[in-house]
Each structure stands twice: as C-alpha cells, then as structure tokens.
Image 1 (cartoon, rainbow over the protein chains, first blue to last red):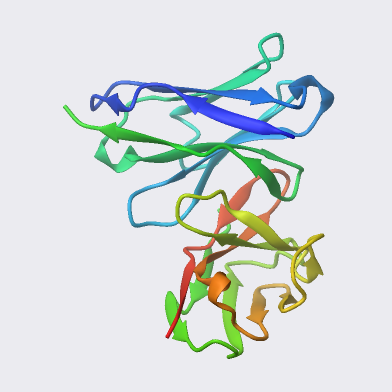
Image 2 (image 1 turned 60 degrees about the horizontal axis):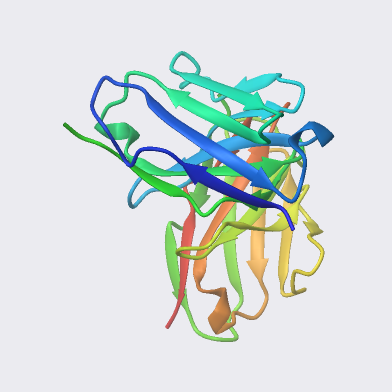
Length: 117
Length: 107
C-alpha cells in the first residue's frame, strides 16, 4: 500500500521560506510516477503547486513558479517542497500526492502551515 | 494559465435526487478533465477521469460527460455518504488546475 507522509514546520514567518518533506513508503519513487504538492487554504479549494518526475523533471504552477522548488531524494524515497518569500496568503494545508500525468491517486493526510510572525 | 470554473458553489438536495455540477474551462481542454470527491479530513478520491470514464470501484451512480470547454458531473441518486465537496481538475502536460469546488449536502 502506497503511503505518503508530510513533515515540516507548522509555523513560518512572513518573508521566510516554507520547507516541507514528503516521505513515501510502499512504493519506490525511482520506479516512476509524478510526485506533487497540493495546498488548500482555509475555507478555499485545492491548488496544485507543482510536481516532480522520478527522473527529476519539474513542473510548476505558472503563478508560483518564481517561488517554488521541488526536489527528490530517491535514496531516502522522499521529495521536498520549498516556497520562498511566504505571506499570510500561503497559509494552507499542504498535501503531497502521487500522480500519473493525468490524475492523483495517493495522497498524504496533509499538514497545516501557518504564516505568521 | 487555464482557468476552471464550477457551478453551483454549493447545493443541498434530498436523498435520491439527481445532482448535476458543471465545470467550464477557459480554453479547449478536449477531454482532459477529472472529477474528485473530497470529504473533510480525508484525501480527495478520484471518481471520473478523461471526462467520462469511471474509476475502478466507484459506484455507477456517478458519471461525467463533456468535452472542449464544458463538462458535467452527475450523481444519479444522491446518497447520504455522498456529502462532500466535488472538484473538477484539468491536466495539460503535467500542469494541473482544480476548479473551485462544489459543496454538496443532504437536506
């Protein structure tokens, strides 16, 4: 059974960089699929942030591209998200997920990240 | 960016009712459209992919149709366990966009 688990700080100061890691179990990242990050601000809908292929190719939401970096560490079977220059608008539940090139099939439970001083 | 809109933003219906949600894309996305069910505290669940194909294990009361810019998601007979928010999601060369969601509850 594929399982994903997010980890990282739950509180980030404005203008700083949000850093999260997704640990994957039950499937080897290097075997394939895309690995992505999706967020949901309080009371709002889902927003795809970006994805990475097991080979390292990255795909980002155009409006976030300048602030987002997604990387993969196949030796640890995990991938990471960095979002720079955060503001209160980046407060959200951040989830990691596996996808094909068309749809998401396995998701983590999500982690709430609050941006506040 | 491709923008997605959904309507209505919320609806309330009785058990057994037919429920219809629409999703519109800002440009032609052919049939590159999926539908998810999202319950609070749970991971979103893929119900329909490629606009009209039922994901394995999903009850047949769920269906989807459409192509181009206009799509429809239908629950033929609403059940209590269908209370959730439903999202459409388009895909285009590994760039994904979700619609704003439709919250469905039971009267």
